[in-house]
Image 1: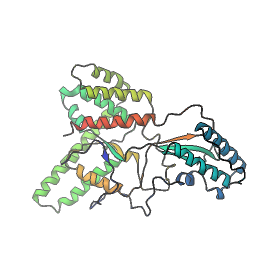
Image 2: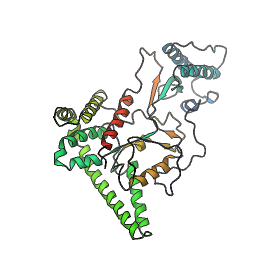
Image 3: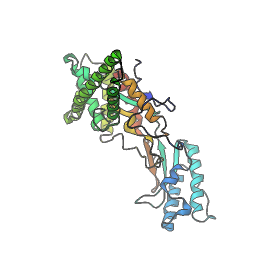
Image 4: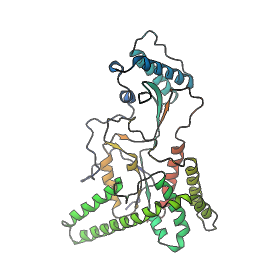
Length: 365
C-alpha cells in the first residue's frame, strides 16, 4: 500500500465510499462560498435597516473606528455626510472594505458587535493551512520506546509530543472522544460485520486488520500516558539540549527539537484552538471541517487499516465547504500605534509540524 504523505491534501472532490463513518456530514443543500463579500457583515452585525440598538452610540463607535482604521492603512475617510443612518455606515464600510482588500486581498473588513461594542470596525485575516491533513504518526515512537538502544531518540520525540499534546492540545487518536478514535472504531465495527460474509482468505485478512487495530489502540493508550506526563514538558529544554549534545544524534531531529522548544518558549500557553473562530466565519454552516479533525496524532500511514480510514475521512469531508482555520482579528476601537503581528505562532507551527511528519515518516514502516 502506498505510504501516507507527510501532509495530505484535503480532497475537495472525491468519489464517495460505499460506507461513511459516524462523523459523516449530510451534504449541504447549498455549498457556502469561501469568500462571500458580505458574509462577515451579515453575522457580526444586523443588517442596518433592521438595527434596533442605540443609534447614537453605534454611529459614534463606528466612525471613531473608521478614522482609526483609515489612519492605520493611510486611507482617505469616505465622505458620507449627506447620507443618513443606516446607509451612512453601510456605504462607508463598503468603500473601506474594498480599499483594504486592495492593499491586502486576504483581509476582510467587518463590523463587530459584542458585549463591549455596539458597532466597531475590525479586520479579519484567515491563515491558509493549505487544506491539508496534518496527521502525526506515533508508530515510530512506539518502536523507539520499545528498543533499549533507541532511548535517546525516544526521549526527545516524546518530549516534542508532550508539548504538542499538553500545550498545543493536538488530539490523540486513542483518546475516546476524538475524531480519529471514532474513525478507527467504525473500521473495527465494519470489519466485524464483514467477517461473517467473507471466505477463508478474506477472513484471515480481516483478522490481521483486527490485530492491527488492537495493537494501535493499546499502544496509543500507553503513548498517550507518556505524552501526558508533566515532567516531560517541564524538562523539555534539558531533554532536547542533552540530545543535541550527544555524538550519536540525528542532526535533523536535534534541530527540529530545538525549534519546537523555541516555539514553546515564545508562546508558552498557545494552543491550536486559540485563533479558531467559527463564530466569525460562516457560523450558520454546521458541516465544516474542524481543526481537531485535520490536525491530530494517528497510528501510522503504513498499516492494514489506514486506506479504509482515509476513505471514510474523504467521505466525511468531501461535501464540507468550510474549513476552520486560524483567524487574526484586529479591532480598531482604539488607534493602532504600530503594525501588529499576524499569525506569528501559526507561521512557525505549521512548517515545524510538516518537518516533524517528514522525519517520522522515514521510520513509519
